[in-house]
Amino acid sequence: MKCSNCGEEIPEGLLYCEKCGSEIRIVPEFDPEVENRINESLSGVADDLKDESIFYTKKLTGMKANKNELKPFVIPVITGIGIIIAFIVVVLFMFDGSKTTESYEEQAEKYYVEGDFGNAIDFINKAIENLEEDDINKKAELIMKKYGYQREAGLVEDSITTVSALTDDSVYGESVAQVAYDQLIGYYQENEDYTKIQELLENTKIISVKEKYSYFIPEAPLISPNGGDFDETVNIRIINKSDGDIFYTVNGNEPDEGSIKYDDELILDEEGDFNIRAVTINKYGIKSEVAKALFHLENFGPSEPVIMEESGEYSQATMIVAVCDPGCKIVYTTDGTDPTVNSKEYLTPISMPIGNTLFKFATVDAEGKISEIVERNYHLAYTTLISVDQAKESIVSILLKLDILLDSAGKVRGEEGYYDYVYGGDIEIEGSGQYYKFVETHVFNDGSTAETGLLYAVNTHDGKVNRLGYDSSGKYTLITISNR
Image (tube, rainbow, N blue to C red; front, side, top):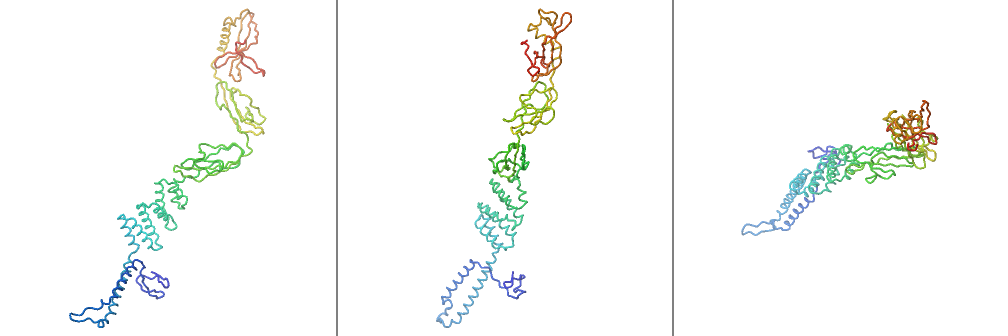
């Protein structure tokens, strides 16, 4: 207790202040209910006092009462009654003063057990109101009880308001706030109100709460590279750091479930500005913070050419086909150097050369800008299934069927001697494959020889026989044998 005069703390049991000497006045707490009861008692006494007959007792039989004789007794009687009333008042004040926080809490518990939640809540409120301001732990305990009463009474909104007050860790401490957050998040999770959970976790500064329920709030994805200025194609990866799907925009709009879903790398291959924003949205429908990256592309060259034939091993004649954007041309090299705008231009499909060949292709646009280089490494090795002797026999067989030769010895009608077919080496026919070349020779009876000028080509893979000629550029070309 503190002195009302100087504010000094007074030890229990003393009736005066040791510091200033003031007498301690014990004044019971005012309660309107007590005042009403006192007024009722005083009112009754006043009514009795109006009836003076109560102060005059009757004489014995045969004696006559005399007011004057009894008047000396009236004042002492009234004084005695006043003392009794004063005693009653003190007793009533003392009795009412016994209604402490503890007794209110007991009453609240009693009503709660009986199922009277209304009175239970009223008395727990009184218990809270009667607490000392600095008794924070007890206040937190009573507020939590009130929360429980309200929940059981079906007062959901009231209970949420009650327990929310305990999340103020600056007043109640982290441990109490943690319990309050557990109750709130448990309720919202049960009702699948994940937006409320997100609000709670984003607004709290309590690390332990954020860590405990971190699975509700996804982390922002990582954009790599994270923006910049570029003068070439940019491949962008968006890396997820939490469970959920990534959605993104490239025009600076805020991403949501209706934005583009990220499945694979983004390829920026045009000049301009790209304001990429991305979020992760988890199974609860909660969005992460937005990841942002700004890309600026300028002086951008044409797209690289598309080469239809992949690098690798080839065993038959193959044409290499390349395509590029309209308005551009393709240049290439086969000597290992990088192509320039002055390199050999691709005009038609290229016959794949025998052996190992490294091709380098690039696109050149109308402004002379060159694209990224595309490399292809080919190894062409024809599968030889036909021998030279078999090839020669194939030529003779075909000519016999056409009635050009009379027999397998090479006899020709109306001419002396015979015709022989002399192997002239292996050749490659562009776009057709590898062939044996044979020179037709006339062998005379005297053993002399002369070339007839006819050439034959036999495919080393399938044994097909053709006449062999030359095109306008001097390259070998195949002629069907029936055209002889």
